[in-house]
Image (cartoon, rainbow, N blue to C red; front, top):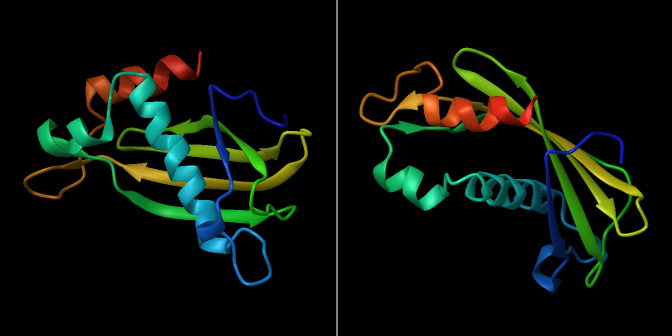
Length: 139
């Protein structure tokens, strides 16, 4: 793998995720990445449902990008390797590499998440519980 992942998420490409040509529909690469992100947070004790319902902060994505390298089709297994690429005062960047089970790079992507106050929607410093999770991953 091209990056040293701190988390790996495995899935199988489903029929509803491909386009008429039988390849993973471009927007669904973001769904795979976000599924990996949610699974990562949950594995560290910060489930998305609890974050949305109970936390005083939110972590919206303010930038996302992805590149295709190889097509994935229905039934193909995919491994999404996740790494925290950058940690700032109010934001962090997550990098994703999507691999086939033959260790072929099928896609890459990044998402930038900003910490905002739940009530005001204004940017705030990364909360301690979030910072602890992502900082621990970079060591």
